[in-house]
Length: 285
Image (cartoon, rainbow, N blue to C red):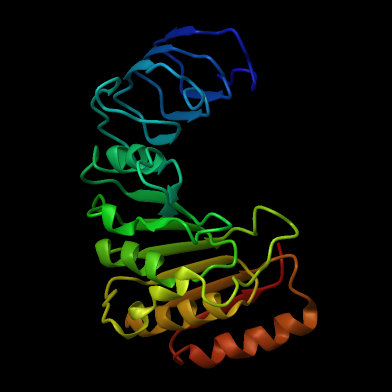
């Protein structure tokens, strides 16, 4: 049941259905109250409906068969009630900002939702770097634990910054994963620099390259939209070192990578791989 995006004037929405299996709510600006009772519901996507509200909205969701929950909105357990979900397989919380100002509320929404679940099969976690981070604080220390997961989909919007430490921080808390899906998101501004300026504070967090990490259950890695930056290549190289039992690595380049650059980058990546690892490298798909 998709509701038309960018709907305005809808402040109270109640959905009660015994047969409904999918709900998608996007940009319902001004929504104040949400009530869902759907015993057969399997997928719920909730995006930018509470985001712009000045007052605290209220939600109550009863969906015991829910398998996929994508919540791209503020989440406060005191006002958003999520009933028992026996079959939750995939959780996708809102972006976690690696750098931010004092009194930054958005990350707390992400963390509160993450801490709501102890065990899930797949976590889709997005790490975002603002374009200019010089006046911001490093926020990764606020992320102190993650659910017990089998598959990690890690989305990195680095905007040219060094992202290795933040991604390492996440992997260190879910070192028993069997599959990693790493996706690089292009800069949010087309004209933005792909390399941060000298002296950027992102360079202060580089100790991760010498720290020990054992991903002894990791069998498969997928890397998508790789552009071949120094930060990307260094991190992928470390994955080979951390994952002693790795069996398969699949890499898909970003559409901006030319054929000649792709061939050169492919040779570099294959030089990192052990003979027993099956490598698949593709141009943009």
